[in-house]
Length: 457
Image (cartoon, rainbow, N blue to C red; front, side):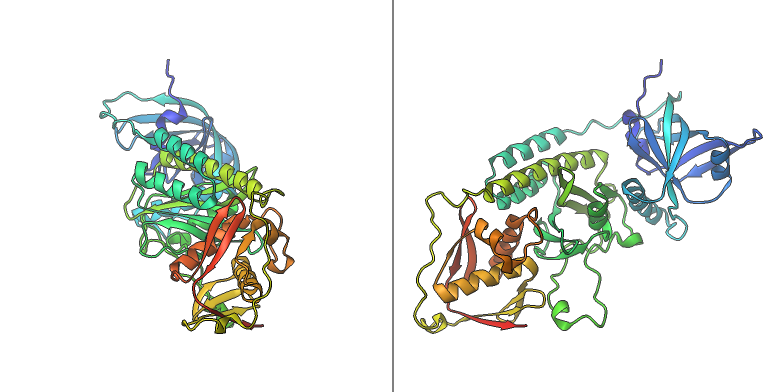
């Protein structure tokens, strides 16, 4: 009795070798054709790429049953799938994931101008036949995947801050899976963009760089809340261009000046983006890439989905902890010292730090270099004004949450992520201005030189 399950032959469904599909017309005339993509949906379903209005398509609409011959890329074993057509999807997570994978297949085979996905045809797998032959020995099973997930879970369980959680995930990928290039981006629900908060393996961190929803592997994974994976170099569908698109000519200079370069590889050959979710809500994206083809398979995708799930749960727990009403009652009372007599910038002879704030987008420049914008920029400006006017250095997450001048998008927006972004951007600009965490939901502004504040409408 043949007991082959769809999960047993998932390597056959990676698109490395084209499949052969046999259909039959209403009058009984058979037709055989190559098909670009047989995509694993779950243990009972596959999706086939619908690219052409050809004889295969006509036959399926007239007779929904077909067979598909797939080949294991390592062992050359043949399997025949008996399938039944259910529906066609032209948008959504499945369609976008197949579109990304097909773009990689097209680029690898030199068919970029021909391979265009019109729809994802979903089929029920009624039977799988293992055909006779002399297959090659299979590769040894991959090891360390479950260990990596366990280590990630253990590390996250010990984390007390988002900073630590982000570093733990990236370190686990590097230490246990040999992933050299990775980043985590958080979702800005108001702007509908993603901003980089942590990365590893790049010449520059890219912290603060942005990706639009639906743009590239990262943006599509975020918009559709589904993993997106490509295994070959491709220029199609902007998959190798995940950085922000250039601004139109009529965009103000201040906007163009506040772009942080995206840190990704110039020519990635493999990319995998997994959404970070909690209770169905998008928190961000975990992203890895490589200069090598076929670097990330379905097992890597499964592993990253598990890690992203642990990270999403950890982020929500930390958010609840730092935003709790008593999070600033740990022996650190909110102190507002008396105003400092005279302008602080004249109190010391050292060279001053000059900071300029543009109200239009809350961007902040430090000594003419762009630093931060948006909510994080508004937070920094509030801290600096309190410091200059009152000499204040101790702050809490809770008071920032209640400060309407910062204009946090909504109550679920992760303030801690904004502070991580701000902390890391300040660290990249030198030691004279920084933020230090002092406890649960509390932090300190450290200023080592006099500051000069200028505000521009």
